[in-house]
Image (tube, rainbow, N blue to C red; front, top):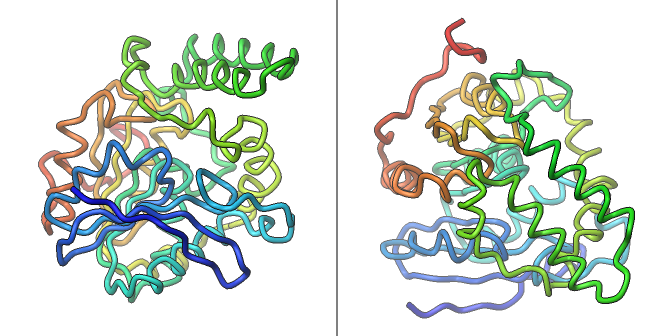
Length: 303
């Protein structure tokens, strides 16, 4: 299937890389093209799919002006709207993974009239200061072991080839994204050679811009109630990066949301349970709740 690509320029002059695939009448937009394209291009079989890289990420323009990054997730929300307007999509379906699960929810809060359906996969929790019980997180020995090795690598620094340093970092990081280490080889991202995706660049942007912007959100019930579209939240019970309790919280607090729980899956549930995750997304985007999608009545299990 043919794919077109190019750049869309934001109002503040940042060029965002995009890939467009398919020609169906319904359009879904998926941020983070460098990571999401290969695994989610299946959706283009019967719809139009637009992937794009975030500002200062992937193959989008590197941003050297700090003022064009300080807005963090709020800038990501506006960039999503820029993509929607550029391609004239109304209404739009959106899919966001990890912290972008929060971004697509924020987008639906600010631009409810433009949104048809929202999918969150392993979303960052809505209230970042909240602590969840251990059984609602993915805390385990692997997390501690890999974190220790990452800390040692960072201490040693990128002596010699910085690209090789990046490859070593990502080879460790991917072990955190799956429950079974054997599944790490199924992760096919090829990002180590992209300058924007160097570990140091990603962590600098996250710690200086994205994390502070999420911490300062202070979402209210009134904010969340602005979401008019159905939301499907998909979350692995062993997610180390974004606690499963956060996925339950989103599904509980959003006005029209349901949760698909992927047992024993970590931060990339589609790697460990592809039929369930990909099938659930397609069914939902086609207009129905997938099998196993549950209405959440409490954050904690059984309470």
